[in-house]
Image (cartoon, rainbow, N blue to C red; front, side, top):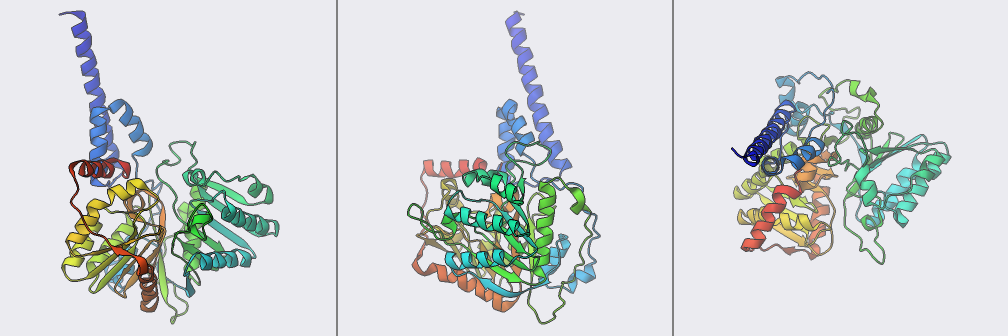
Length: 466
């Protein structure tokens, strides 16, 4: 047998062994870490490992892990009887070992960017002891400069200021100069920096949470980043519509606990991992106050918490679901729940921008949108960019916060939503979303051509899931 033939057979055998090892690694990691992936993501990884194992295997080891629950806190599963005594949202949250619902007061839902900025200034100015700030983007623009100067001023005045930024988000915002912050005494932490040990986190798992907490007493949160387009815009950038709100009360304590855990992870301080579990009962010293619940989701949660809450809320809806999101690329369970709600007579209204700031999201969304429209849902297209994230089911529950209705937010990002249970406030969030529809037009589904259909499939399979 010629030597070249032997070498070729040896190379093919080696290639086969590498491919087998790559697939075995995928199976072992997925099984051992209980990784639930978006179906097209799983298909994408398997195909990549089969075709290009030399490239796909290192990428999988770097980016393939979706859950990073290190040394999870040991918690006793709530008794079935205790869960039955709670309303379904609280029972579901308790079963996923989330902090209990807590009382709040003085809820202000910001009508627009000007109101949101006024509230943000008030929260920052009112801090006398501590100021905890978490944001995805701190823009290198006049708005980012203003917020930065305010934080520096509070630090110089003796307030303990902690600023938590996402590693990728910092670059997306223009890479804000953090030197003046540190020089003024602001404690700065980067959540998974661009250059880091792969054992500290995954670059594609981003901290998308947004919150400002003053003295542990007042919370400002929602979807806005600290950049000019999220508030007022300028000559070059039109203002985006977005949803933020602020409140006081015991709910702020739950948000503070979440910030402390995020800060602990970012600074490699494991003290928070030993925090005792919370009781499933609502934290309410004032029996007359409304209550709400912090719903964190992401790699630090064993379950897909926000997705589970949204799917359940959709199945339990009896009259109406209203939602707003800038990017609509849901998984099959949420899409199916919304479609089935419409089929059984629930009015389903979804508000999205006619054109978002992410072209890939706009391409990928048409398949699920066609399914929604086919089953009777109404999709409203807003001519301006809207970055708000909200979801309301009947008068029973309203979600608002940082999570988009797309696979990245629902499966990959660290997110935080707040679930409101008081009917009067649930209606207020629904009214805010409805008010944005004034100049919107209904989406009309069109059958895609072959090239368009192929492009949508490729984007859905690869762009969002890995």
